[in-house]
Length: 118
Length: 153
Image (tube, rainbow over all chains, first blue to last red; front, side, top):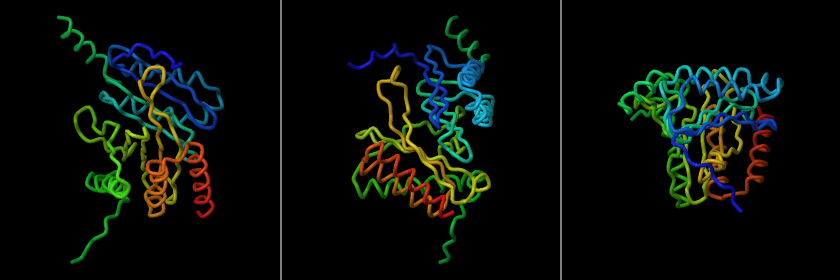
């Protein structure tokens, strides 16, 4: 029997740390776009989830991913960004934005919510 | 008439060269699609939030074949960041079974542009999209050919 899908949310995606036998992820699925702040929080959560050894291997990759979020001016699905090790590309941190928007500024979200509500 | 050959080395610094580079990958796909009669479409958004084209080469190319539920994504690395013969590939699953109706099986290729990388990419695309070889077999093929290339380098 197929697994029951969770109720679909408009804004979905995930961070993944993969390669060399590792497969860990942190997902989001919510009604409002993911803010930069929450995107970075999820990335940090993923960083803390993996072993010291795996984290060390991906130190630069996590930095690149953080920089990507910090520089983003909102990113619309569908997007994949792979931050991969220079020697072994299978060792990587992947970003998947599967639906909606991610890394929007909190201020824009507040303004948008204000106009929607009033 | 003098035909000047394009140098793709500065594809990240020049949007015209970037677009020509990207066109080369789509030409390669087109030649396969015409020969083997299959339809394809992109599955990733290639624009930035401000409507401009996303030219970070991560990826520079993406395509999806609905019938087989298979995709190819190419990430191109500037020459100065990696040795010139570099090409590596792996299989990936895009999507989360917990939330999505469908997940996509992707062939992901990281490369520095060269004739060797271009020919190998064409072979891999054919094996994955046209021949439809099984995942396990594809992984073995990628590993073996990457090793051969490393040894040759």
